[in-house]
Image (tube, rainbow, N blue to C red; front, side, top):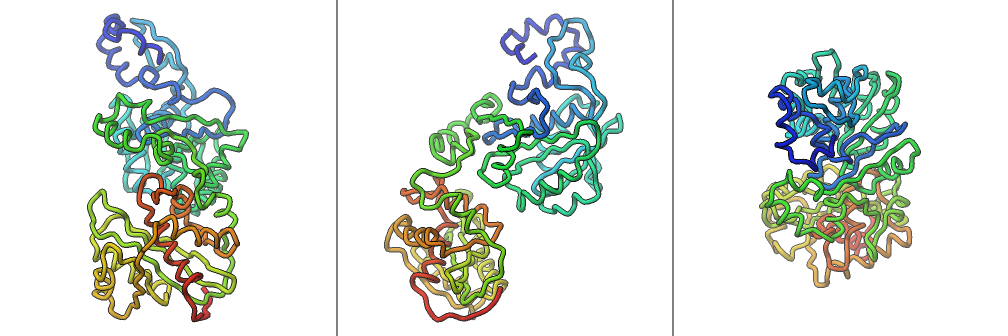
Amino acid sequence: MASLKKYDHDGMLSGFSDEEVAVLEHEWLIWARAEQLPPPGDWTTWLLMGGRGSGKTRAGAEWVRSLATGHSLIAKTPTAGSGSFPEQNGVHSPVSPIALVGETLSQARAVMVEGPAGILNIGHPDLRPRFDRSRNLLTWKNGAQAFLMSASEPEGFRGPQFAAAWCDEVAKWPNSEAAWDMLQFSLRLGRRPRQMATTTPRPTALIRRLLAEDTTVTTRMRTSDNAENLAESFLTSIVSRYHGTSLGRQELEGELIEDLPGALWNRKTLEDCRTEQDMEIQRVLVAVDPSVSSTRNSDACGIVVAARTRTGALVISDETLKPVPPLRWAQRVVDVYHHFAADAVVAEVNQGGDLVSSLISQVDPCVPVIKVRATRSKWVRAEPVAALYERGMVMHRPGLEKLEDEMCVFGPDGLAGGASPDRVDALVWALTMLLLNDSAPRIRNV
């Protein structure tokens, strides 16, 4: 039915009644691109990786709707005057209950359910489900149900059981493998439990694992594939700006970018340096790469916590903030300093000068600030730190995915995927002070 796009729609629709035209307006098989429809075969996981705005959410919402209403997304050509489009797509028993898993419950509601392409905004209005916000529950007229779940709370999957699941932005999930594993135990109802995972690709352990599984079918989509449904300003400003960059290949082309050629860090090195073992800590620093403005296009404020150990250093936490007013990030820095019982704050003062230490002092005058000033390029400053990783002297706590992503796309131009490497900057300052410039150990266990 997608082939109808090749014909003159007005001419084709002239043979149908007003009622049939109303049905056609909401018939996904006519408007969907081929890659937005479920792939054939006996798969367990449909992994749909696509660029921003490529139509992933709509594909996921329509798949859930087809399961809940019992109408298969099997392409068949309509006949004028038939009067029964949905039934011609193929009918199956409604699949229920269905898990709708987002990074958080609020994101699941905002994107998967209530968003422009969410379940409540697709299909004929008379056939849409009822949403009980207090119970995070969708109910269709035939009794089929879908429950919103949070990937941030893997233990929440203990108890419930489902016949299918739609998982959105799985590459962003915190503790993604734990959440995914717990979900698998709950997919135990019906004849053929299946799951769909929609995401902008990132080379996380879970994504690589799904790609390697025989029961996974992978579909890829590009932002440009959905150009007719995107704002012209987005296409001209964002798409043109990042076209050809590693960030653009990932966020727009839907490519899985493993490593940036020539980058100082690679995925394997960072995976090998992760540890949950207790370590004897000698000194803890909170490093800050400050932002001096809070506009939408401003740099983030990089905040990284690291410690010196007997064998090297341990990167403990990434507390980086999106652009916020200076006093806000100063408050966060002080909070992080106290939370991790740090010894000092290391702050780059190239942009803010004494403003940085002044802001932190306003929040808490007792917090010691070590001011550092960059005299060499970001890449040159990072090279000796990268060498520490090659020597096995730096370990990472789990949960530093965003920092590690930035490290792997940090290039000689001093940018990370076309953007300022705020997390990397903070990391470099912390490890430089701990292992290359600092002394005076203070032993403590964390």
